[in-house]
Amino acid sequence: MPGLLRGVARTAVVAGTATAVSNRVSRRQAGRWAQQE
Image 1 (tube, rainbow, N blue to C red):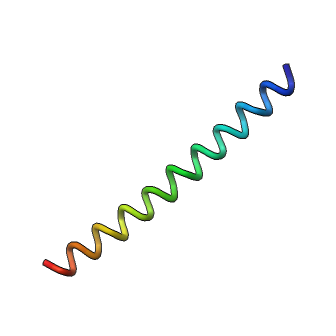
Image 2 (image 1 turned 180 degrees about the horizontal axis):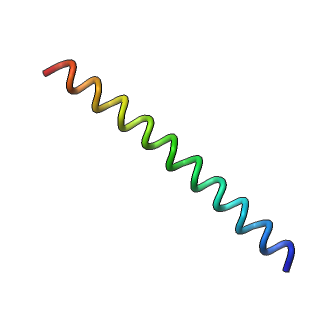
């Protein structure tokens, strides 16, 4: 059971990090497109 919780926690951390990175990248791309226009 502790191993399962550890795996779930790790998955949550990875998912949260991926979400933060994708949000940061999408904002950066949106900024570039706004500047080009």
